Image (cartoon, rainbow, N blue to C red):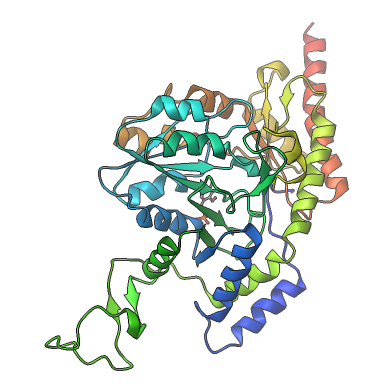
Length: 408
Ligand SMILES: Cc1ncc(COP(=O)(O)O)c(C=O)c1O
């Protein structure tokens, strides 16, 4: 069976993890710091804060931006649950604006239309690895006093071009439009630490605050203590002393995860090149089918810089006379495991129950869902497997044509 995604781990990754496990310190130490420095340099951001997963990174981003009860956070409904759930954890109201029908990313015009006076943050999701229209999203959000949090969980290592800044490309995490950007290192993503996430920003105060919050708001550095020397009980500041100065969480990354992260980061460009190659092969093998829309890029130059995490096509199931379940079954019989990414978040039972959201709120996203099918995409997919996936998909149309022929 060919899954939709899979990590690429080789002997050098395993050696890096083993070496880190031999150190006396195995959680949040110098290897995490080195990973943060290298990752920040890679994406072109001033600061990077490593955490246990990207859901935590989203929470930290919102918390340091001051998001809390009474605030609304808007994101795309075509995302993983975490992009919206993070707002809920902070007591804010998660909300959704519709997607752009061509790129499946947050539509800036819909964002402006849905804007409410209490909207304080936008989580801009780079669906499938294609950057969303960050300059336009930032224009809408900033002119209304909101912060832009880039959710580049699908787009680790990606960069994009923009009609707003011709002749240049910008890195996700290192561009002037996202105030902060978060990345995920879950195994199916473009590089992995097992579980893991990163928050990047150019703002020193936000990075410092995020670091404080990822270990329970606890301070051990003498220069930063706030209780005075004449405190009646905690006056003496010996080597044992620590202070909790804010309410944080345990969001720490381990040293061996960071070691894996450093090892994977060194191979990221190769992983992305192979992903682009597979996407090009899929596009070439499927684009002539009238009942399939292959992914479209907002900017043609992104063909060489997008960091494809998913390969999601839009299928006209009615045209081939099969339901999506039947198509999935037929593909599974060929050893191809397709997936649907994602069910629009606003349609989840919990979101309906708590916020009263439901069908009709984001019609473009709902239509996208009705036709969505993600095909296998990961660097170790062999050319022969790519050809097999293409052939299996093409056969769906041929068997439909035969059925129609027999019926006629
Ligand atoms: C768009 C998006 N945002 C956030 C997350 C959360 O990432 P993590 O699993 O590292 O918490 C994911 C993970 O699937 C994601 O796809």
